[in-house]
Image (cartoon, rainbow, N blue to C red; front, side, top):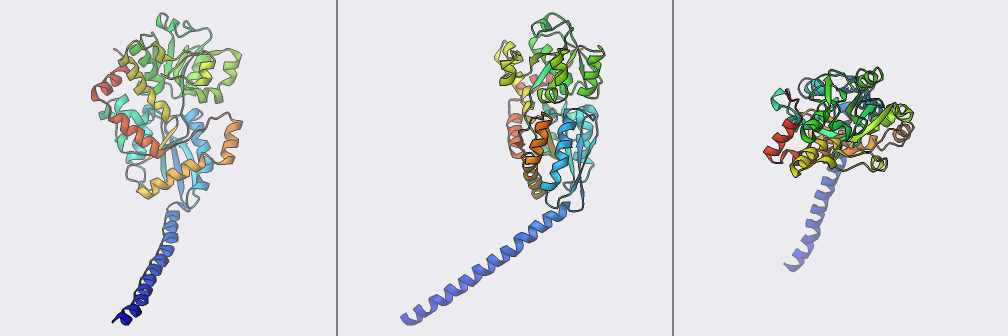
Length: 357
């Protein structure tokens, strides 16, 4: 019995080993197959990045940079095409990507930084999609919004803006260039007059040069450095205020005031913090809710790899383009936390960015 027992152990061990070897072999065969299947998703296809703003602005510049390098980091190395679909503060584009475009990972939305906070910043019933269900694949960078004015504007300092009226351009009441000056009016008491209807920052800058308007708020500091540095150097434009609670060190050193320092109550500060949280989503990108999870994961991985590509970074450096990618997972977690904030605070923030009629 004992001898038989000893003799049977190698048999059971051999059987177990063969089973494990078979499983390992199966996994070895399955893994390349799965990778091959994922590559087939994009191989020979065109990935479309739709920018929710007009051509030539900061969002467009970042999207076209992404488009030049993303294909080399996606499985199957697809062709990538960037086009513009401006309208309704990028909600026209977002509604198309979320509800109309194919849900196969070949359509990526590049909206305003306001779009992830759509249910807070505007009436949720006006949106043709559910912002909270979109799959964010990342942001190219964090941004700092500033108000910039002509050198001959009535209010040439932020303190002046509480007693003098500057006419500021904006895309729409629901766009950052529209509601950020309204936020300063409603929460802090500035006297900006906002004129809506400009397609983007490029058109507003042209309007400033023609003296149609005095300035604009909600302009990204990175865009200002990239596209309008000569106007700053010449003194034609001047920085009025950082639209932040915590300042950007570079702007702090320049002595540019922070709007958060003008809050008089904890509630005012909390409202500003909630609205300014969009700056973390400086250049956000998303795909539709129905895109399969494994494709979302692959897009997120490729997105981060793209913004770390040495060739991209070299090109961005030549353009003074600030790059500091934030992962899609981090953005999704941040949005979950924001939407879990007290309902009354979210409603007060919503009201703080509305035009008082």
